Image 1 (cartoon, chains in turn cyan, purple):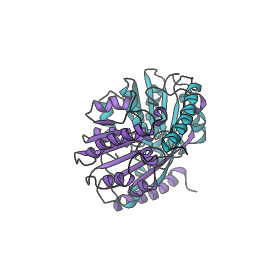
Image 2: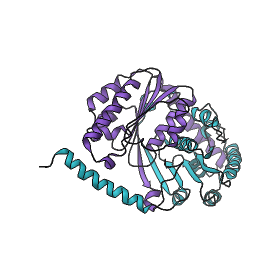
Image 3: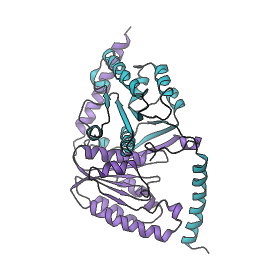
Image 4: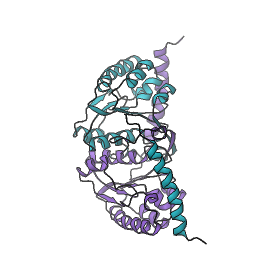
Amino acid sequence: MMDKQAKHKIKSQKLKEKVDSHVAQAQTERGVVLIITGNGKGKSTAGFGTVARCVGHGYQAAVVQFIKGTWDCGERTLLEQHDVPFAVMGTGFTWETQDRESDIAAAEKVWREAKLFLADPQYHLVLLDELTYMLGYDYLNKEEVIEVINNRPKNQSVVITGRGAIKALKDIADTVSEIKDIKHAFKAGIKARKGVDW
Amino acid sequence: MMDKQAKHKIKSQKLKEKVDSHVAQAQTERGVVLIITGNGKGKSTAGFGTVARCVGHGYQAAVVQFIKGTWDCGERTLLEQHDVPFAVMGTGFTWETQDRESDIAAAEKVWREAKLFLADPQYHLVLLDELTYMLGYDYLNKEEVIEVINNRPKNQSVVITGRGAIKALKDIADTVSEIKDIKHAFKAGIKARKGVDW
């Protein structure tokens, strides 16, 4: 009978062959569109993690925050130290403002800033944090948003976060991850934690 | 008939009441255990995003990398500039080494370093990147890992990433997010991109 070590070696070998063949096949080099959607925790955090990674390699990245951005965020403090420009809608959550017209005006204003980043090849990565809501609520013109993202510089990647990404957005994405909420501390009465949740 | 603006106001008001009531109920303050699992892209990235957030607030964080860590990562370069200590298993993927015994020795070695972070209240946050595989493969003693995490300093939070988190780990977690792979650029032949994927 084969021992654990030998079995492990065979299993690992098969996995290695599979991974190596995928790596060999993946030869197209260009910027990608990555969507992180779903109702679970970690969407914006993954977006900001990607920005940190990009900046760590010495590339330039830009951040556009739809909805969030009115309060003190650790990630912003850190990334601004590394010259990452932030365009922030900054009106708070739409359920706080309760005013559709002013929300739309604010969304359009920050979208104009986003378009400058999305036209500028110096940015290796643009994070459009919580853009999905702007399309879901019809705050921004869907066709225009899709067109601008499609026409971005060839080597620029875009990360889009937020719940309920619309189909048209998923269609143009190269990678779509959906985060499911299995369990959430907040629902168990634990307060959102500085340095972890914000 | 109500116009769009009025409807939006009522809907937003209800949502605001719901959110405010949840916030009022969440009063427990302590460090949390957050697991980011599933087969989709963004697990480690969300983990590193949380570290960036933590460091941005001026707290100390530590990173332990199981499996990954042999190559140049943007996030590591950035976070080491902010005095985040890294303990790295650094043997590469287990399917690359194909040697169970040496993998176990490497896992145990980095786990000893992890335990120092998990006993030290100066760390507001400890990221255990890809710990799940060490438990799934039986490289580390499950009971010991659970016990050490449970006995960590009260205000310390822990983020655990990786596919296939075992039940015992999910049971002690406050928050569990599962990332589903809906679409992946790599499968469409697009090469992993520096500053985005690593």
